[in-house]
Amino acid sequence: MKKFLVIIGIIMAALILTAGVFSAGFVAGQTMPPQAWLPLASFGHYLQSSELPETPSGLSNTGASQDLKELFKPFWQTWDIVKQYYVVQPVNQELMMRGAIRGMLESLGDQHTSYLDPEMFQVANEHLEGQEYEGIGAWVDITGEYLTIISPMPGSPSEKAGLKPNDKITAIDGVDMTGIDGEAVRQKVLGPKDSIVVLTIQRTGVEEPFDVNVTRGAIVVPMVAGRILENNIAYVQLFTFGDDTTQELKNTLTELLDQHPTGLILDMRNNGGGYLQTAIEVVSQFVDEGVVMQEVYADGRAENYESKGGGLATKIPMVVLVNQGTASASEIVAGAIQDLGRGYLVGVTSYGKGSVQSYTELVNNEGAVRVTIARWLTPKGRQINEVGLAPDFSIEFSEQDIQDNVDSQLNKAVEVLTRKLAPPPTPLPSPTPLLTVTPAP
Image (cartoon, rainbow, N blue to C red; front, top):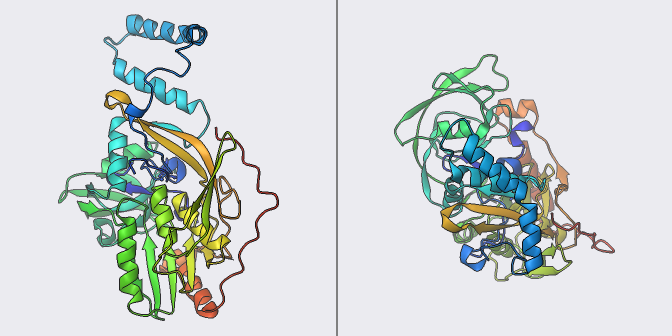
């Protein structure tokens, strides 16, 4: 259903996925769906600017330097023309510089390679560091005709106000949002706690749009939530892969497993990703040993990531819930569990974010650039990028499910888990030979 389309992880508040997200990654400082994620929900390899040269590679070579000077003559010619003749003077050279960086990365044609200005970079870091922000507390999709609610956060102002998945925000405080960029609309929904924002909502099954008054609050982005379902099945929901996710997951698993559940459901629907290291730590809570992910670079170099061992829930029967918003780090966890025969996947095909990005902070506090540097594969060598993970049991939401507020995917997961509670699924065979990996753009 459209309500479960890529989100990524856009959080209506100080979260700017994406575009998206991805997606998750190596963050040396420690990786949304997609076009919609702008938090560091994509795999990111975060390098300090001090680690990098300030001049283009090859400039130490005189010939290369001359070639670059010749190449950039039209650029500097255009720069000078704008500085001297543009009708509105003086021009903002800093914005021109940022625009040049943005255009350079967009020319690569890779949706996961992009520029984050200083404000976007700060917000993205706040998201994965688990900091607070002020807003209504909802994950949203900014890529459609209207800003669309993916899911209200538990206990948030948006949930208390009765907002539902797939609600479309057509106006804010009486101002029509038709034709307005999704990110600009998201910014308008932000605001100080205790202030009221009036959202005009278009809801499936309701003939006319209607207004909802939401009192903004201070929102702490949840990482993990859990409870015991009626049939003594543990239910754990992962919202993102940030700084605190692993510890929160351990705390939640300890609390639930102390109640001796018969099975476990891991819900990663609409989880756009986060840090690579966190993804490995998370999957290690469910997989005892072995390779849980492969990473392949443009030069053919490959690196395997193995389970850290010592997980709290490596024996209990489990099922994983996935959907179109399950991306990047979430797909690493789900792919390992499926490949290694640890559990079944239930839902619909995941987003397909299988590339790795390097997040590099720029000098002079000018934000950061996100550049695709590698592809990742599942333990059995399956490439996920632009393909996704196909569930073992495919269940889509119907319009009736939405109207009745019925979670048919969760119900199916309970059914599958209750029926199987014994033998795990057969591990998927390794492709022979391993899939050829297209060099990263």
